[in-house]
Length: 261
Image (cartoon, rainbow, N blue to C red; front, side, top):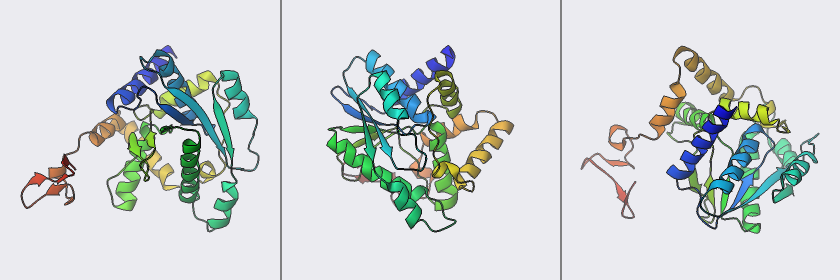
């Protein structure tokens, strides 16, 4: 576990450094769902809060979506024992999702939009200038392939971006972390995991199929995920077909607002 913990610290530290995620005086809302990823992210953020040469605040926030059987006491008890500032937001998005989603369709899209809007509003109310999400390396690769195969676009989850209003910076500190390392760390720490019976209970999601496909690739060609992650950081606009990125008439990268697109 020392090796796994060291790897996670190294990978999170690399993401924070490479994408300039944290600055002195930041107040960061760490979104805590009750799953292994968000618990691990909170642990990592608390670690860097202690060892970083700068000062920043952390407030853990959970959105209680009023899913049936949700153990409301688990997170408050855990965070109180940890001594972390926290806020539990109660909003019955579960009812809205179940009422609005046609039978046989996945709930992810609507659930994500409702959750995102609520969390953005909470960050503003809590005086946070940044918000951290628990997506990891596997999530980023899977999202890229989902968009590539099913949406006809080359896009994934960026490690750092601004919301549409431009008032909040969104961070993914686990961007370089392998899911297997996170799972091992979570099991060792014995986090009080809260299962999701919305997205996690749907069996026919394309994401699950993509996850299986990647696992099969890894079995035949080990470390494919590392190479795919490297590819996402090594893009050549002149060798793609996007006219918005590259001027094929003059054979040069396009410039917008005095910067390369």
